[in-house]
Length: 402
Image 1 (tube, one colour):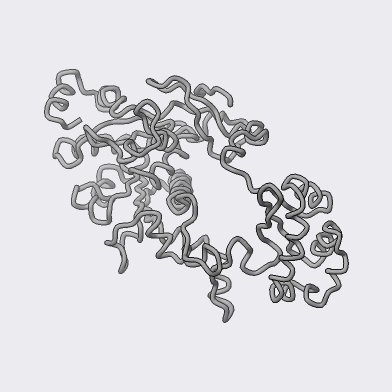
Image 2: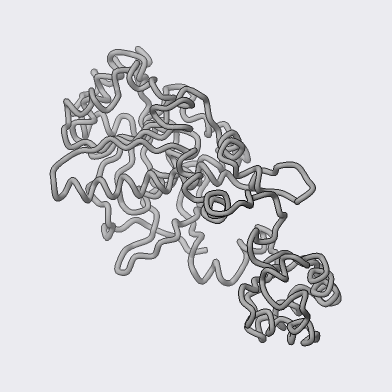
């Protein structure tokens, strides 16, 4: 790990983001923007804050989940259900570039904080709304979490063993991809505003985000008469692209052409398989998957994962052992790519943070700051952004507005 400190060499310096979102998809988006230098002001309810502050695992009472998702941000407590809280937010909007929210559709309008209202105070505002199923449509009012959208997008139906039940992906992948699409959309809208001066209203749905990424299974559904089904860890179209047992674990390999299949047969000591009528083409290999799998696994299961991968690599076959998360965290590659750095947390001292993966030339990748304590920057922002004095801030605090 490397220890990081802040620097001024950042691509989104000068961009102010008011983050009304919570839990994962919105916070993941704004963490990416903060990584690139945006000033992200996280608006949280007084008392409890973002729900994810209460998600484990915990380190001395602080949520590790929250810390990873909210790196680089400032926290301001504000009761948006109160007239005074909404007035303060609108005042903040006037000097901000972006507002992002992931309320249920209709909630922002009931609060008087929807795009149509806020753009009257700032015509150039970029306003991003994240929801499960979009701001309109037959499913718009349904509550959504990652698991719900995994089920409703079709992702779970094509994930899992062939003869097993639908299976969830092992990470909140839809929350993450929705956050990435939101960050992409916001960045694009900011670029467009530089040319046109126009603000934009962005509608980003978790369902749409996942659906747009399912290109392999959609190619089957839309262009063939073979609807996609669960096929385990193998590729639904090409074989052998699959997981195989080794003596001390498992490996994966990717063989996508007749040429690479011939190289595989040589590597496992069975060159005749490449001339076997059962395996000559990809269609043949798919039709005789079980026989081919048995032949390959007879070889892989007699070797350690590392030995099998090394032999395949020498033959030009892409392969890898199946690693644990701990293996990856401790790997030389992650260390060399500096994907984990430490940052000084106000109560915990040095804590590890995970970098976003895009490496821009001549750009500082260090974290601006750790995740904030609840309301840590409230007084600072009320003073520096809105010009309130101590007596005004005390009154807001006494009435639980901030």
